[in-house]
Image (cartoon, rainbow, N blue to C red; front, top):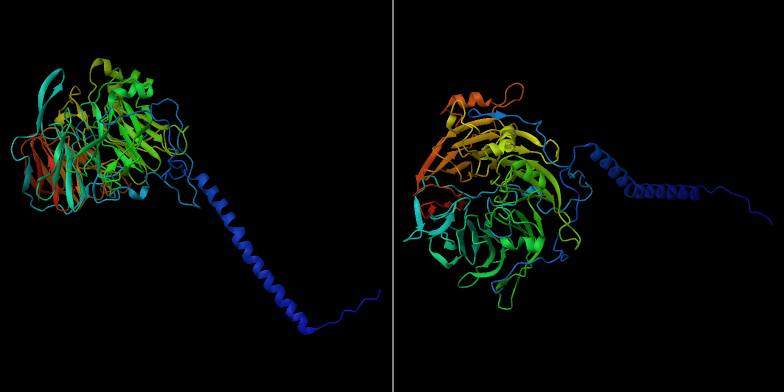
Length: 599
């Protein structure tokens, strides 16, 4: 065979060179898209692994999954020295062994959460309004301003006989009037008008026009008084969720000429539903959370409930529900019962949710976090406890969560007898206003503030109840707290330093509310006070970066460090409820049997 000899052609060589160069460029671009992002992702993952632990596991979005656990029940109607601040960062959780949430979410795809951190302190829901106690799942949205500058009573309700009823107390039947703890009204825009909806000590839920105070619907009467705060459906269904001392938690529709009870859940069914024993009581003081067709609610029977609502409309356009109780789990453990030396372990605080962790506390002082990332995924899923911290004292105030997942907890100090020596020692150790970091489950205390000394007695009278019944308010760089001993405190939320303190007469049970740099606080004398906190930006720091010492602050008395009082409006009697602010009006009730709008 004869081969053709190779010959050199200059133009062909140039064309071949250009073609080869082009192929190399294309190959390089392909490699940059296919290989390099994977390398960067691996580097990011390695970096994340060495960073501080995230507080929640990576999860799939709950979405609108129709998978659910077993149906459990429910029924339709047919069926200290004063001003003491002590850092307690070394205080252990005092807990049995538990698992912790440590897996960092991927940075290559935004994680889906039940409650996204960006929603902290923001309005919650698809409808306009203040829809649950403290307005959001993290319990730190207080309403929409402006705050009136010189308010007067625009209207009061009812116009004649006060809202009162007879109910038992400590073995006796007594008269209860007005609205009590927590008693925050809900405000919602519906059917072309703004509604104010609240439960009261007359045992009824009231539906009023926010502008005039006139009844929109007849009151819905239960068989005993209502203490807690109404939750309005955040997805626009004309539904409210409310509990009563008559043992029942209800779903009520307000889309007709009168309110309709659609479903109820009885506190005494807990043993039948779950095998959990009913401890302590049968009230429903907690304000429920509703997220993605699921309801989260704690009962004074010491159990926590997760309910699939299955909301819809019938052929006539009226709202309907077909609830399924998916999970009922105890709010206590054996260690708690041993530590507190009694069985008073009711859940009266309203639950909070941050990312994929459900937080609540009980009257035994147990603060808990439960992973709900798998809720709705399959029938076998069960909630798992991932955080436990024992405060030693009753925690009826709701847990508040900030954008970093830190918890702010108010603690009562009321177990004072000899049998409560362990619980009393614990609450005096950890304090009454506590910041917790749940990503450090074995040592979560960031700082704490004590409220041990009633009315600045010296030496302190440790036989007297102290601490917080009111839920703290998170606003900017501050935590505002109102105590049973009458102290209104402005606390630097980073350091725990008390920036200022105002001593009011009597106990403070209504939770402080802050809107547009104005702090509202009701007191036992029946006055609602407003303070200008526009100058609060945390305490001044010294050269070492520490906040003002509480001793120095407490010695100042009335000074420029204290926020100026803007006004005070006297109502009928003591204020135990939390006010709601909406569109230039303040709504609240008192124990004199009346409900008010201030403009």
